[in-house]
Amino acid sequence: MKLAIASGKGGTGKTTLTVALAQAAQAPVQLLDCDVEEPNSHLFFTKGDSKRDVVTVAVPHIDPQRCTHCGLCGDFCAYNALACLPTETILFEGLCHSCGGCMRLCPHQAISERQQRIGYIDQWRHGQIDLFSGVLDVGQAMSPPLIRAVKRHQQADKLILLDCPPGTSCPLTTTIHDADVVILVTEPTPFGLHDLQIAVETVRQLNRPVAVIINRSDLGDQSIHDYCRSKKIPILLQIPFEKRIAVAYSRGDGLLDALPGLQPQLALVLNQARKLYRENLT
Amino acid sequence: MKELIVISGKGGTGKTSLTACLATLAEQCVIADCDVDAANLHLLLSPRVHHRTPFVSGEMAVIDETRCNQCGHCQQLCRFEGISPTPPYTILPSGCEGCRVCAHFCPQQAISMVPRQCGEWYRSVSSAGPMIHARINVGAENSGKLVSLFRQQARQLAEEQQSPWLLVDGPPGLGCPVIASVTGADAVLIVTEPTLAGQHDMVRIIDLLEHFSMTGYICINRWDINPEMTRTIRQIAEQRGVSCVGLIPFDRQVVSAQLKARPVIDQPDSIAAMAIKDLWDNVHAILSTP
Ligand code: SF4
Ligand code: SF4
Ligand code: SF4
Ligand code: SF4
Image (cartoon, rainbow over all chains, first blue to last red; front, side):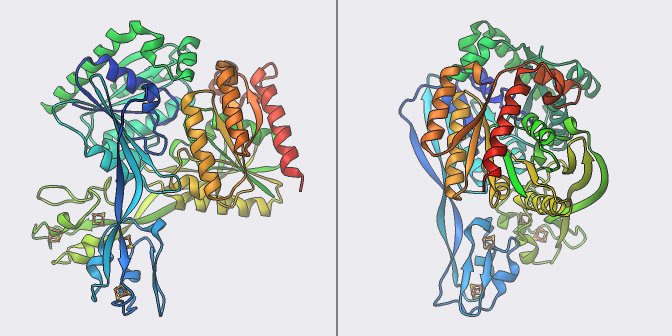
């Protein structure tokens, strides 16, 4: 099962929960940190031997010997990444989406592709957990290619947990569009509710089953409950605010370090998610 | 006019609540909510909308079924999961990045490109001053383009109104929208928290600011959750030439103010509000010195 844990609003405890779910599973798990702009899952594990793979994307390389400055590639590029000047054709790497169109199009075969680094993926093993952490290089603008590279490590026979990027735009949809179940972590405040509504719409538009976990459940009001009831969204777990959890988190300790008693409830969350997944298949 | 961008990298550090307070404290400011993905500022500043403008950004492919002969060429060429993997071939709007490759190379000329409607943006009057904000459509691309458009509109508005301040609630993360929001601003205020994740993300933002040779300041929210970590974060920032302009204590009043749809600065007995006043005095003093 591919279980995506997302949040709409940031800082709701999504990463803490993802890590705790991985620990509570007591089975082989792949934890994929797809929050590549701010990957934080690895902070909850002791540093061990890691394997690092560099991730690249293809960017065009223009051969000045062959280019006749016809201007076709510049007219074609949807992102204005190519400037065709009378004596030179220039690529603005920051704008290129690596679509490959210009290379195909050039009538003089002046364009080839070369690999350009955008970030890396670190891999660790911690007991039964395989952690894959994608890290976008600072100054790089586009995260979806790196997210896709992280997701290529998925093995269908394992439980896969995806720590999603924040928000509801392309990084999130890239992560969850093929997930089996999406859990949205929220908090019972007006901000939490507002962002939850948008996240639910996004997930439903992609036709994924959705469930909710409420964190800091006693620090707000009832509006999340009312909303979930009206939309028939199951609430799988509620975690009250405890300074103990906040302090443990600040030190890099996980949820289960602060509240070991939560393990059975988290295992139950995984079972309920599996149930949602099966219901969706039938 | 001074433009101050408030960003946090990591979400949930209280960036938006803080921005709402600063906007309330700054006399005559123009406000822009560039956190379009999780636009929440309007929940605290109750803007009344005066103008709404739809915006389109980029394009999307559309297949004309009457011309398509299902050859699958487009599917092989698309590098973005924009076309369904199996026939009948259809465009998947959540994957299509509008690169035009399929449209250009379809042997039947069955594909055309249409502009992508991404949402609406608003010019409003809020409880803290004129405000620019937006609602983006579900799953629409949140590119730096929208953020750039907003800042440009907000600047224009600030100039018209002769406002001394432009306050921007910045987007999360470190990618394209953030880069578009910080370049060219007078100062960037990083809101962090005393956690390992907060520290980690702050360092990445400082790297980013250095990359673009920009001046940043930090403030630490809920600093008393872990005073030791607060000290560490402060030291790291100061070693990189980024000074700390405020420490805000944990205060349940922030949530209770939010439930009343008001910034916490309105609660007279709130300890967070007092700390935020000090923070604003510091920022004001720094940015007012030429
Ligand atoms: S299409 Fe080819 S020949 Fe024409 S300007 Fe581009 S690179 Fe040069
Ligand atoms: S690969 Fe695509 S996006 Fe990049 S320069 Fe060529 S046409 Fe433009
Ligand atoms: S390339 Fe054109 S004709 Fe072939 S499947 Fe795609 S849309 Fe249809
Ligand atoms: S326009 Fe580009 S991204 Fe969109 S479907 Fe066609 S090839 Fe794929």
